[in-house]
Image (cartoon, rainbow, N blue to C red; front, top):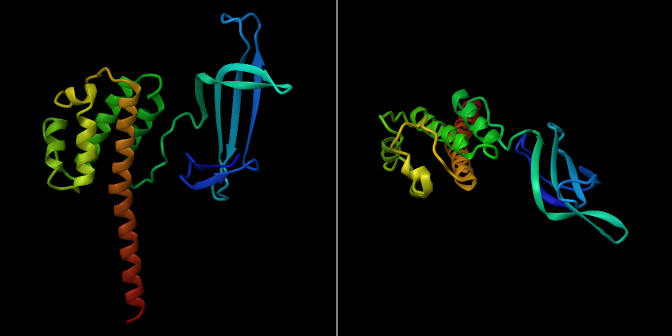
Length: 224
């Protein structure tokens, strides 16, 4: 079955078909603790973009059933893994500050293992973005976020404001960004998605605008 997919390496959007993916199921019992047939399903995807062609590999563990003459994977999934690449981090260009990219990538890599550690890195990443892009430097992250309201569009502000008010994230915005806080996986993932949006809307959009303006100036000069 074909499905839409975004490559984690090049961010190229494409439709994945049987030509680009394959999967295999290894099933077993071996008197395991659940005394049930279990299976590990491994899926591989090769990016259709000729400039990329990177391999993505994932695996999931679950129960299996025998149906229509063959053994099949049966939801729900007990556990899943991203094997290659090892995290869901998007590949952002070099013009995004290195410190911002490093905190973001590490937050993505551990969000499943330790949501609270991931959220701590995301808060530090968010502060780094605000300080670098908007040149707002105050004592606390909450004060820096408040100072953003007059500088950014209402939709972006509403998204930032909504995320900072959820659960334990909002309760700890006033404290040191390096303090580890208890958050659930959904809250940690929301922080990551907010950071991805801000990087795209600010750094990437600014770079594309600058490139476009350079092309316009070059075209104007060639007509003189």
